[in-house]
Image 1 (spheres, one colour):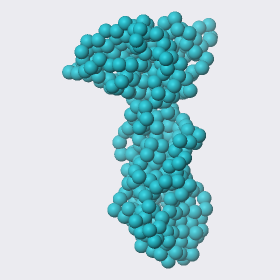
Image 2 (cartoon, rainbow, N blue to C red):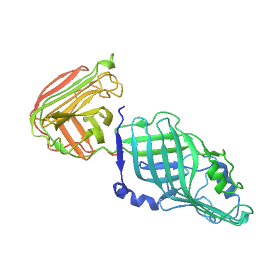
Image 3 (tube, one colour):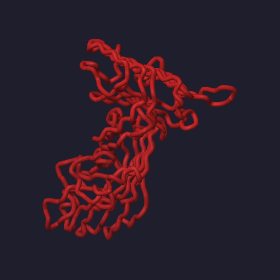
Image 4 (cartoon, rainbow, N blue to C red):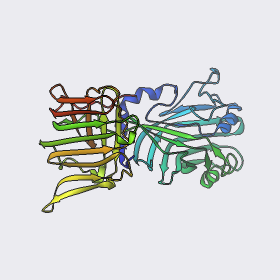
Length: 380
């Protein structure tokens, strides 16, 4: 898929506020899944803490079956679905997933009989283009343990690597980080008495909602066409043509900075294709920007080969097996959405369109009036 940059802020997660006060019941979108360290949870749980493990301030957990001790279920046999961390901010590029993801929450490990309380607060995950990741945390240590001083500062705690490509669907982006290792800096901050450098950390998984605008400006189109061939997926195609339409561009968008997304959606399929900012160029006329053009003729980054957008016109062309639509039945409510930054334009085939359909082969709508509204972003 294409490389693009996605950003969101805490305000985008207001709908999840109630969930912050509830136990986790499995990983949700806009959340990180990290159990910290399986053996360390067992070690802490074997002490006298009441409760031994707690998750607060944006971190969640399942309740401890031992209601007398309380706190979190330590899930001693698990390395996943132990603690959830709420995502509050992210900037990243696709398809590499490189960027920074801020997670919110406070997980505290308490073992009074061994004279310490450790809190892991608000992890920040930074992934580079090679799939290497650093997890930085605010760590507090309150210790009466010999040789282990108190600590209250941020530290690069763990080193991780992606176990495979970042997973992108129409609605989510998922990172899978394999087992991590404690850094030298973290081991030093812990005084060497708890976790040595290189000690294994549980894997981490992060799922974020894909930041694609859910509404936008409906526009008319001259033609919207889909092609398919079940026996030869490489023959799939999508083409949208718009002319003589007073689009709100180019003043309101700049895909050379924000990148863009093409979404092809109907009643039976819904697929989004990110378009890298690096593949966009401004179209100039007498030194003035009059539009933008995206080009990937060899389909190196995904199935969209050409996008041209300017005042009064829009053209989108894609082809190949990377397109996800199928035409085993005539699709209904077909729309193509172009989104960049906070701007979204959509064109669709409606009741007044002239349509043609060939089973499993092609669908075309022409003389398409502007739809009443753009498709909403589907819920998980």
